[in-house]
Length: 216
Image (cartoon, rainbow, N blue to C red; front, side, top):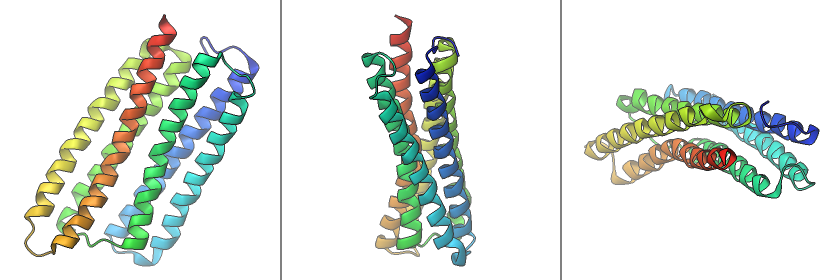
């Protein structure tokens, strides 16, 4: 566990890992929802959207548990704030997944079949961005020398997401057979899926700063 030695600190690290896994589960659940939506399995949408919301709620519960233990005195004050910032930033990834689930279930945007594969790829790459972030956070606790490897991977994946996002938006606004309102609806969906990667990268920036501070 490297520099993490106290019993209370170890408990927090394990809870952070649990939180990260809950966020991962939320993203996997969103992927299932998106695939059902794109394949027009509309009878499953409400159930799958509720599953996303439930996993996001479970991530929130673990995050609050971490905060409660942290404020009881675990870690030195300067690192305590840094770690809370990382957890809160990671939690925003799950929040965005929940937003997309609500968008799909409640607003039901029209998605041309020609965009399906690229939209799936957009979410897949966004999830890969979060997976790289999760590794960066893990190495923050066990090997500071490897943190930057995964911070850099997070940035690379997020840049790839940006490219897919731009290509999709160009295609959407070049379509002739859907209304401007439908295009704006699709734009919100695409931007929101890409925001998952953006939020992961924002969190990785925090991880990078903390890893540098721990080396001093």
